Image (cartoon, rainbow, N blue to C red; front, side, top):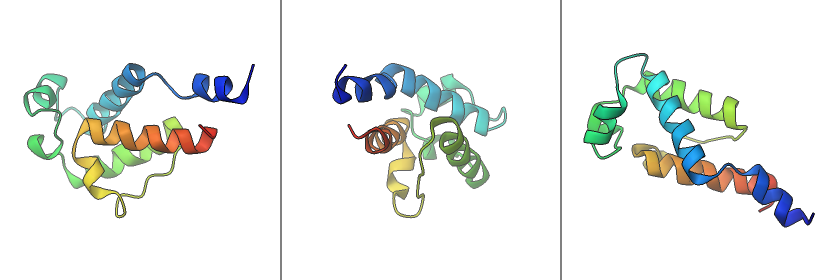
Length: 99
């Protein structure tokens, strides 16, 4: 197996990663948010008034569960939507696997 094939296998599939991120976001809101609410807001965290404490919990959970370091100050605009977070995490996972 080539290193490229190995790298591709370690980066989660997009749908799986998205589902994990959505789960983390919902869990971080501690019951104040449902997937239906998030979908109705166009998957925008600011659209559902996601709290600053929820953001901190979410970033911590993503880092711990997915093994990436996220800098909320440097990449703040990417944390506004589920797609932005997924893209950011995907980029970091690619960096850690050498993809």
